[in-house]
Length: 320
Image (cartoon, rainbow, N blue to C red; front, side):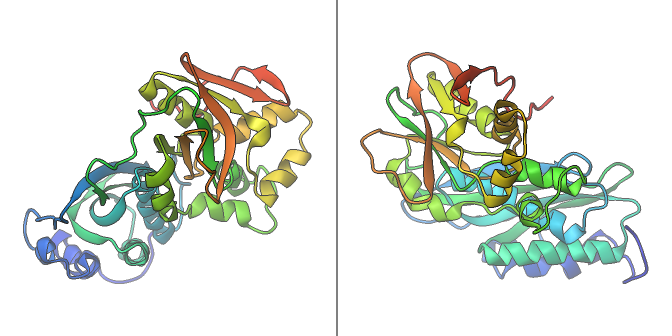
C-alpha cells in the first residue's frame, strides 16, 4: 500500500497536517494541541458514548483503500449511536499505522475521515496514533447527545411487543462475498452496502417515540435480536420469511436451492448496520420498518424459515 508521495511526518507534524482540520473549530478540542479535551454540554441532555475498532483482515479486506477504511470506521460507530436514538457530535480517534503504510495512504485515510465527520456533523476532539508491525487497526470513540433518560437501551422489551427491523437485511454479508469473488454483484449495490454502510441516524425521532429496546445490526440480525432478548429477559421469535430484502439479495435468494439455509445466512451474516428494535403491538409501524417477529415470555430466540422452526446456531458473529 505504500508508494511515492508526501514526505512522512513525525507524530506531531501528522496531527498538525492531517487531523487538526477535523476538529471543525470545536473550542474544547484546543486545536489538538493539548493532552485532553473539554466536551461541550447541552442543557437537558445526556452524553451517550460508544467505541468500536476495526482490524485489517477481520473487519475490512487486506489492502482496502484507506479512505474507505476511515469512512467505515466512522459509520460503524455512528450506527451504535443511531440505535440509541442519539445525535452524534464528537469523536476521539486511535490509529495503529502498519509500518509499510506510506504518507500518501495516511493522507487518504485522513481525507476519508474528514469527509464523513463533516457529513455527519462530528468534530474530532483528540486521540492517538502509533506505528505497528501488525495489521492496520483503527478505533473511534464516538459521542452523541440524547434527551435526559431517553436513550433507547437493549433492555426494555416486553412480552407482546413486536420485533421490527429497518431497511434491508443481508446486503452486508452478500457484499463481503462479492468482494471475495464468491458471488456476482453486477450493479455493485451489495459491495457498496458492505464498504459504506449508512448509519440510521434518520430514525432517531421514531425510536424515541416507539422503541422499548433497540440495537444496531452489526453482528447479525439474529445475534443482535438475541442481545435484546438477553438484556430484557424475554424470548424473541423471528420469522425469516419476513426479512426485508434489497433487489440484489432477493435475486441471490431466488437462485438458492436450500431456502431455509439461505435465509439463515442473510439473517446471521452481519454488517448491515440497520436497527432492530421492539415496540408495543398497539403502536403504528413507522415508515421504513418491517415487522419480523414478536416478543414472548421465556428466553433466547426462536427462529422460523420457510414456515418451519430451525436451529439458528450463534446467529451471527461471536467475539472471542
